Image (cartoon, rainbow, N blue to C red; front, top):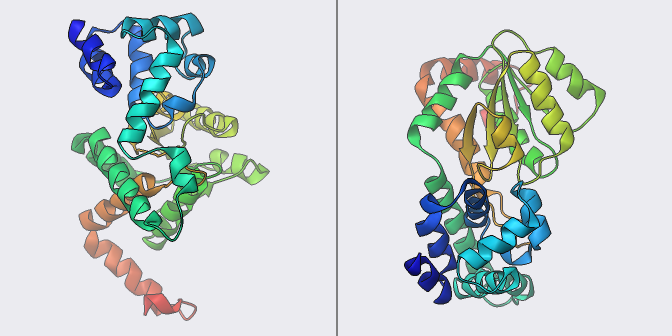
Length: 287
């Protein structure tokens, strides 16, 4: 405990969270895990909001800060902000960074960090299980709302080109509900959602589960609502400090899935692409 408080006092809040994690109670682990996965976002959260996102209470959040050696929640958040700035990730600074300075360089460095954290959050065994589930499924339903719909569209496009039985839901229209009802035998739903997921997405997941679908989640942390409802989970790191947060982590997961599926059955997919190229309406890129 002394080492944990020393880390916190010396501006190492993230290290204090990581090193003390195993000794925390269940509720404190929920808070610590959320802070670790969303450290860039932490300085902007009130105690009430952090409590809501971790299914704890305001008093539990305050006591957790004190447990780490801070006088209270505001002091812990100030430490998070100071540490975040030292790491070069200040959200306000990024938004005001002159475009004619090294803004592009900073954006690329942020993406590199996102990709590194995405790798850290996943394991090969889970990834291969997910690939196997998609490969064997006779019906794949992709679902994601708002910014997650961009990742869904990417997956839908390439899985459809490969000839896989895929449909996508990116809004709450009537035909989206019909997509759930039309799922065939042994269906798989791949749901993409970040942070507080859209309620319609959560209802879709529950509806698919009622049809005995297996749920694969792509989300930003294990405490997300999508992750809690999924049977298998892949995680992408996501920077939440920018107005337009980078989705490079989520796209990298999507691209890895497409590439792995193609590699495992390259001959069949090449034959399908060859037939696709022979169609008179094929687009120029297939030539």
